[in-house]
Length: 379
Image 1 (cartoon, rainbow, N blue to C red):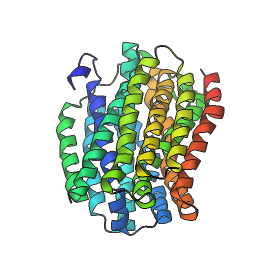
Image 2 (image 1 turned 45 degrees about the vertical axis):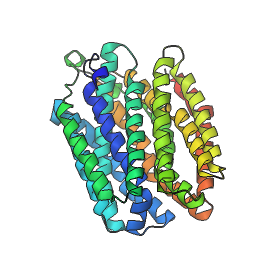
Image 3 (image 1 turned 120 degrees about the vertical axis):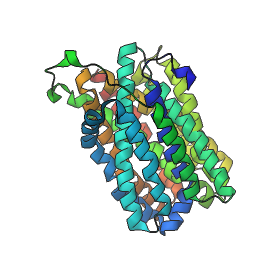
Image 4 (image 1 turned 45 degrees about the horizontal axis):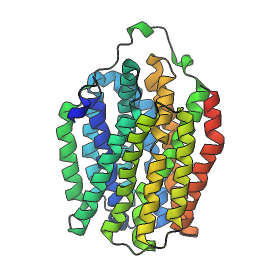
């Protein structure tokens, strides 16, 4: 990515964001196939995610240790492990094996996510400019392109293992360029975990949780909604997560510019309400095209919530506590991967996926009305 090279230290975390986007997009577009492969109903699939995603929660304790241990190689090593480990999802024959593989995968993904956000936050502090939305935009574009390519590969008859294998090879090739030296914290000696502002991290983490819940709802269930409830084909189903990724990328690029003129908290409120409108449109859609439009609006809205919330947390704590604070906020956010799929699957089992997406809209309104004013008071 030549356009990133003028910003020292940004290339490595940017490539790690690409790796994350490729992994989760290829998985999201293969959800209907994998769900059938392991023989899971909507409710069981939700519970599977609940159990397997506990690994993401564990990453809050693992990430600081891994970051200290691997140093400048933490971004590249965790990205490489991510690319290799998710291959095993494609060969999981049943629910139990899927849970075990996803448990490991979610832990690795969580650690990688924390360290790449920490490196980005360090570059932000050094450059004195907002860069989090830019890197998250890169993730979104990688996600959109990979989701669409995976949908086309499904239509052409390629297996999940083949698709995941190609993605893994691309990620391993990128890892060569992911060396990311940590910031010099020699002037921060003596500052301990007590300096981490609990209120800020807690509220910021809850905002991250809502963002992850909304994103994972589209990633994990949009293809099923379009294919099963609206009669779309595999390509139409893959367009759900693909359009989400594309519009999230566009929204984050605009957000990168808008952050110069508006308060972060103001942008998050507008973003949450926009995502709620898109969620309702997708829920009430009668055709795949209308649902895809709804997911696109959701993407434009939700695009800013996660990077702005993480940026607020990262910039508002002492440098030595940055990884710890981001890990704690992420851990709270990762609860969305534990409870979110179970909630989405449970509501879908009792009512419909349309009702599940209506619930997502309610959550977004709640964040805008209640959480963001509380977060603004912490700044």
